[in-house]
Length: 424
Image 1 (cartoon, helix red, strand yellow):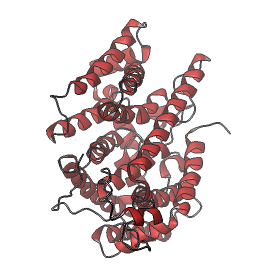
Image 2: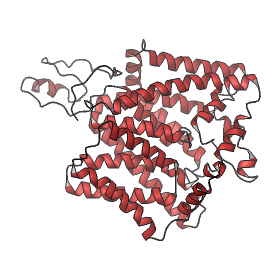
Image 3: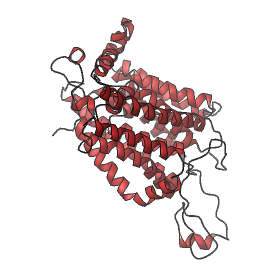
Image 4: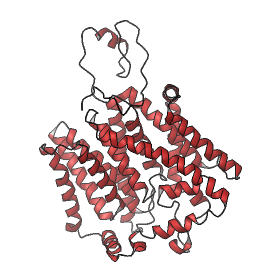
């Protein structure tokens, strides 16, 4: 079996559930603390509606790996919150480092495949080279943030080099939807006051991005970029959308019964039922997702389930917008909120909520948006609490003056009306 989209999603689903199982006590504690909140009740209602609809219309779901991925990603949000409540900033840095490393390995794997004269639409993991921008585009934001907080000159120079390489790949691949996602992130951060233009280091980011873009031309240009420019300049909406408009229209036409419209066709309906129309794909081609999260949900959940899911997303997007503009929060959370907004915009034009890697990243960003995780550094230690720190060294465990450590405070959903004392 090749390392294709379905294999990657299946392997990712297994890894998600392994992580959730390891964090089961934290997941249970977070859910227990918020059992009376509106959010988990709305999520439970959405799940009940979808499962009941699939059962009534005879759609398979227990045997579909896609169902287990959806359930795992829902559990991943409190699992990430529990992980970060234990490990705080070091834990977040570990996750970021793993993300950077895995993305670079994926880029190397794709590059090695291309050097063997493979077609750019028959690659491992994501199949199409532009789909690797799911990771690269958002990783550009992460590396740009790391440039601002790096503590040594060597780290800044290394991160700028990495930023230039990622910028080169983003431009060389000719992805257009990633530009919309990056524009959303930049606008949210700038209007929210998170970008400090007076800092000289801020200007290093556009300089590195510009050098990476210029390098595409200096190294001979890119046929993929020229192809996308020609499509955009054509002016025809069908050409500009790369066939997406007809793909969405003809895919939704498969919902040809009241039951299908109300409850959908079950998990992974687009690929399982081969809903990709031949008029768009050609007789010998196949894609596994409709390149639009809302169309994907309509096909899987129907109108009832999609209304509930979109409602939850809208609420979370409002929270993310407020978080990105909250000057009292740690910069990691503000950047994560902007990234979540950009990722959701990206998902309306491509398969970010279908592929497991960006989908699980959305769960991490949601945890950073939703929960008051106190990512700021710990306050300086005092002589009074030094004895209690000897008993428990976990930064998420509250210190006491006695020899017995107190119970760890689980993360809570932050109210939009309150402020925190954490400092960026």
